[in-house]
Each structure stands twice: as structure tokens, then as C-alpha cells.
Length: 214
Image 1 (cartoon, rainbow, N blue to C red):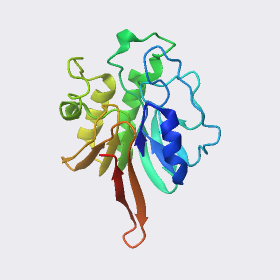
Image 2: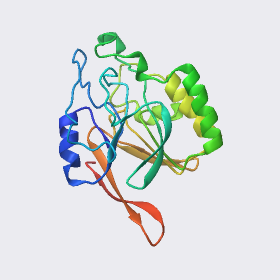
Image 3: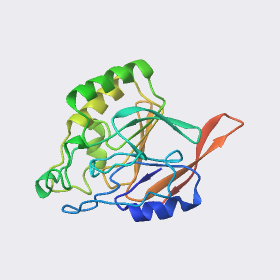
Image 4: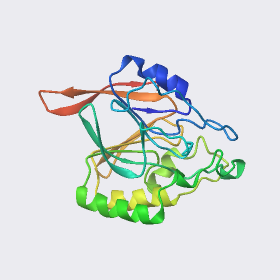
């Protein structure tokens, strides 16, 4: 699983792996750029991308996961939630490098919360994180930008308070960070950071075998 702003580096990283899950911000690296990528030779059944806030939603391929729901990649089952709020929205142009779809709609987030309470996911992958975690991950990169919570982070907070998954992976904050809080092990991945998992047949569970770069 990866968090990346640069699609070319991501496609290089996955050349040696059978499956991958990318945590968003894939194809619009800087304000003013249209965003583009070459995924023609990347199998969407094996490599999935959870849409972040910096995507060109006009040209998403079938690799992208939007909204929320369950997905399975190479036997790895997880619950995903796309999107986040762009704190630098004033530097961007709607329809070019800023899109209304960057966050799930209010009604969609209400449906997310109801689905979460019923399905109680074990492994979660999202672009953003619960609002309470922003104090830990939102300072270094966005110092001085006045980063605040958003409807996405607030909805994820409600979800977390209602049910605590075992593992939760997210990106968005340009920082490597992990902690175990209230029953959930959280992992925040920086740009192009990654974690490798293998399935332990003896214990019938996924285990972390490598993480990099730190």
C-alpha cells in the first residue's frame, strides 16, 4: 500500500509486486496541473487506488475506488473511504485541479456512518483520518496553513467512535506515523511510503513484513 503524489514513481514501485493499494493523491501533484498518468499496463484487478482529494475526477480509470465500501485485492479484504478536503483550495481552480468530488457528499457520509455501524469493518483504508488524529499528523506539513477538520474527517470520527477496527491505514498528511489508540492500530503513510504484507497461513492472518521508507 502506498501514498503518492507522483504516479510515475508509483508505477515504478509496483513493478516488483503482485498487488498494491494506493492511498490517494495520485494524479494532480501541484496546483495548476491537469493531472495525468499511464496505467494502461497496470491491472486494475491487482492494483487499486483509493481516490484522494488531489485527483482529476474527470479522467479516473477503473483502478480508482470512490465513495466507500468493501474491496478485495489479492485476498486482502478491506473497507475503503475516499477523499479529503483541500486546505490549499484557494490556490486551485474548480474543474482543473480542484473538484467537488474530492469529498463524499453529506448524504453519502451519512450512508457511510450507517453502513459502518452495521458492517463493522476490521481493516480500513482511507485517504483522510478521524478528526481526533489531526493533532498528531497534521502539524508538520501544514504548519501555518491552519489545517482544520472537515466533513470527511468528522464523519470518520463518528465511525471510529461507533466501532473500532483493528487496523486503519491513511495518507493525506505527508507524514509517517503510527499509534495504537482505543483499540485501533493506525498507520499514516508519507508520499511514496509503503508497507508490505504477507498472509501467514499458520495463523490465518495478514502480517506486516516490511515498511519503507521511514
